[in-house]
Structure formats: structure tokens, C-alpha cells
Image 1 (cartoon, rainbow, N blue to C red):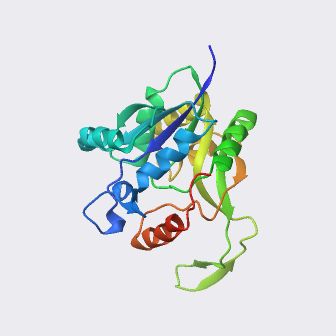
Image 2 (cartoon, rainbow, N blue to C red):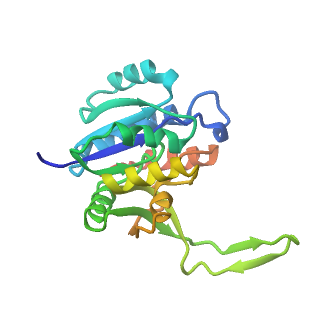
Length: 233
């Protein structure tokens, strides 16, 4: 049996920080919904065999018609109902995967400008090392505020901003989520759960254009990038 790479796309958020009455994944950039752009990048990737899309339970029917109207997203195999948190949503999709999936790649539904090259390099990193994430170096000066409201400068030499995609061998990320649930651990990304098990995570150089659409400012920046034609080339 040929081993497959499964892309898991968490898109079950409600987008409170966006300040609009529609989830951010359905908002449009240059006339195309954010989620469409993300799915198109993954669907076109030669490194991805299948896609599991995680959506709010109440949106299941809407998303089915939403995707159907978009055209051919032939790699989407299942819509998975999301949970109360992103970690819950991702775990639901991981549990729905099977032994035929060697690599599970997790990519935010609201990172629409991921490139084919970045997907390839993260998947390759996971195949070689077991776990890999995209990240970019911190460019701004970083300050720490202490309990006395005083600022000190933190060296940024070893600081990186984690992005998605993040990819893992299935047995590693499955075990990481099982351990997190058993020990009531919550993390801000999947790589952190793997790190807690003492497993090294390979850093793959990401892109500053690989933005996550979470605020009105992100939407403006994304609109500019979309109009300039930046996509999953």
C-alpha cells in the first residue's frame, strides 16, 4: 500500500478579532474567499494526496455547497466537524486519518499565500526528520515587560515566528495529541505538543508573505497581495 500525505486544514474558527459577522475564512481577497485560496494551493500541490477540511459543525452543509460552487477541489475527501478549540479541531481530523497516511501536514485555513515550494520543503522535512515546521526569523526589536512595568531588550538572534504548514509523521502527531489530551495540555500550535515529548522539530525557512488572516489589518495586507497576483505558484 502506497503511503500518502494528508493535509489537514483547520477552518473552524469564528474570527472574533476580525470584528465582522462572518468567519474570516469566508471573507474575500480580490473577490476570492480566503479559504478557496488556501484549498487551491493544497489541491494543486504534488506533495499532497488528500485533504481533510475541518469546519464548524453548524457550517457543514454551507461549506459543502460553498466548495461545490468553487469548482474542482478533488483532493478534499472529508469535512470534519471542528471542536471548541483549534487543538480539538485538529485532533478530530488526526483521529479520522488512517495508517495509509504517512505524513500529516497541518495548514491554517486562513493562510492563503502558501507556496508550492514551501509545502514541498515542509513535507520533505517531515519525511526526513519526523517533524518539520515553517518559520521566519524575528525582524523587529523584541522587548520584555517585567512586573515593575520596566522594559528590557531581548536578543532576537535565536527567535523565530512559527507558521504553518507544519508536517509530522502520523504516529508522532497522533501520540502528541493523545498525550496532550491525557495531561490536559493546551498549546498554540501542533509543533509545541511534539516538542513536549522531547522530539526535535526541523525548522524550514518560511515566507513573510505567508500571512495568517486574523485581523482587519491582515485583510488589507492580504487584499494587496492578492491583487498583485501572489498565489500558490
